[in-house]
Image 1 (tube, rainbow, N blue to C red):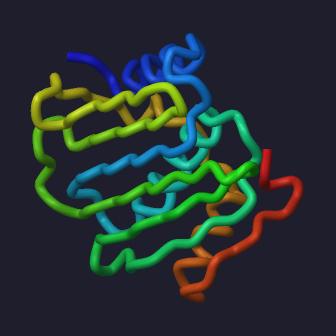
Image 2: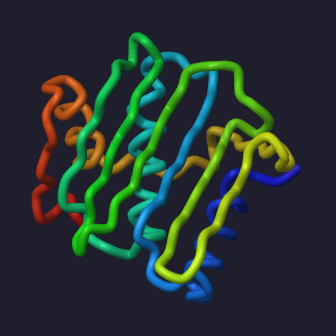
Length: 155
């Protein structure tokens, strides 16, 4: 069984090969049965992964939904107009529970959770949560407004 870390590394490898050209959009959908307290850390980790894939500073983010409902959508705006949409849906996962779409200016990459092999991930393998990114997501979700990131949080 593949791990989620291996999936993320495979996406990074494709992006590094430049076969897609310059990535301009990422959609990352995750379905899971996590409790409300684990949604912010999960969104923060995924945001950091997407930021690494795109290799650009994160300028602004906007979160909608609520952790109590288990449905949260997070939009990320990077320098040069590159964007990402990260969606967490608290539900029974379809297949592997992760669906990724990366659009570049010369092609696309799609990982479809339904037709893909399931992955497993141990909590010990998770990266630490970036506190500045976590705070920005929380602030946006609570205020319902976009949040511009500070210089130190952009990298």
